[in-house]
Image (cartoon, rainbow, N blue to C red; front, top):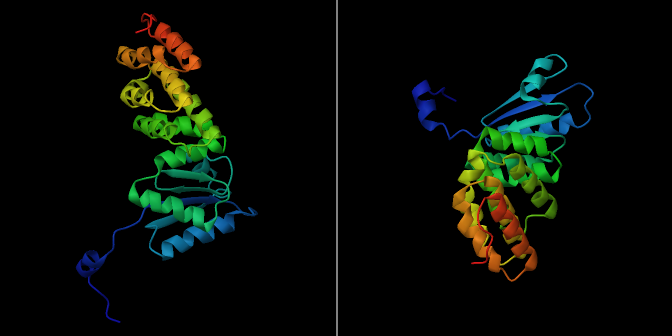
Length: 229
């Protein structure tokens, strides 16, 4: 088979998939499973490249990414700690390649009780907070994730990132679900922005007494008059 020139190889090259990083250690029972799954994705061309590091030999690699256990993998922007099946690895690889799935990833972190990791991900890229706000309006978002979303938003109280999310949260005050309206109202108060006042004030006439109560409390936090509109 003739060898193509560099120019010919460059022209013929398919778009590269996301890069992957895997940290493993000798004696790790689950590391081979993740290694096999990621290696298969490289062979299929779904991963552009895969770096594998033995943290027993290079412990600084684990320290650099904050990994406390293995297997630990990163696929594009997604950090995955623990055992993942080939199907799960493919799922996150496809999202990384498409530039999607951040909301699902943050929900995954929250459902698996990795709140600090989720908060760190949002602080690193504040626009990701909008991905969490979108999840609040989905009936498929489980309660565990909803509680986690609230915890993340509380961590972001008074920040520019939360103030930037005010329009999205304000839209949720029109949700047909009372719990969504109540949560949105509370989170708008945490933003501390006058822009949130009209949406919160409108809930003073909500048909649900719990929502009306939260609206009044939220207006007080925003420094506005809680008289019914």
